[in-house]
Image (cartoon, rainbow, N blue to C red; front, side, top):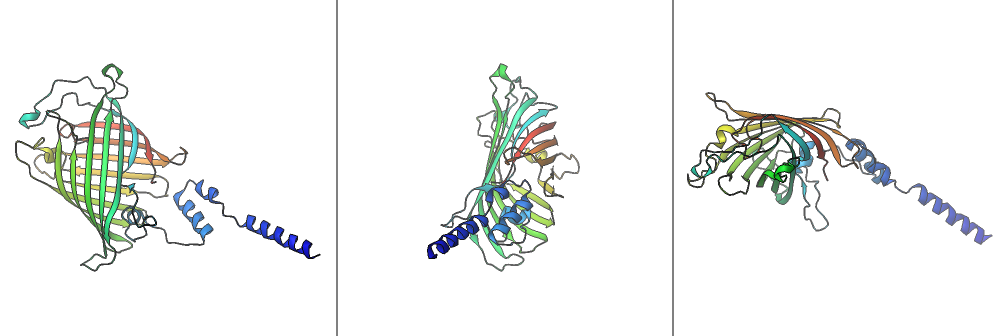
Length: 325
């Protein structure tokens, strides 16, 4: 009788354990970020307030992603994209006012190409608690962005990479601690170049200030910069600010937590000869192994890339934007 009771008790315990086993797979399969987070919170018994987009991007609440030893892993920075792009006016003959970068012989580039961007950052230091003017914390980040333009369909010219831009950065983030409104101030040092020899070399260094504001599912980033001066003999593109611009605004809308719309606008802030760049992005989730979003991009103006900084064109792109990892 005792053995039967013991067997029955063990069987009940096994059934009970099986019944309460967390179903992590069901959470992972939810396509909506908010639903997936809520599912995990329910299984773990933790209930956190939703972290806003700017809070997650710059870890303004200190709930980031260090491992057991406190080391930060790589995080997304700018969007990671793979797009097929068509341009209204391909840049077949590049030039800049620099003596060493005079007009080149024309190339036979095609208007259709593959454009991809990889961008990541990682926190390399922080002051979690501070009380300085309007700011409550400070973090230092190292960032890197690479953007490439590949003439994939131009087999007659061996499908060359038309242009690749590299941009390492050091960024200091001051967080205000506010839940809404003004959230952060970034102070950055950026080097951007295409790593090519003359007459195709293009590069510049900038110090910038960037402020971020957020209201619900919408946020705005505004940035202006000062170009670090170079000697005439080393300056590959002395007039780059007249075309690329001196300031930019980036507005994000995500009304239903699925679709996302981003508007980027740059300006040279010149009244007499205004030039700039406008880019509109739209993305929506697709079932591509839960990794990517279907994206469409429309852009017009100067500065699609460094080699095109003084070349005006309009582009239409379609492809994938990869999700945060």
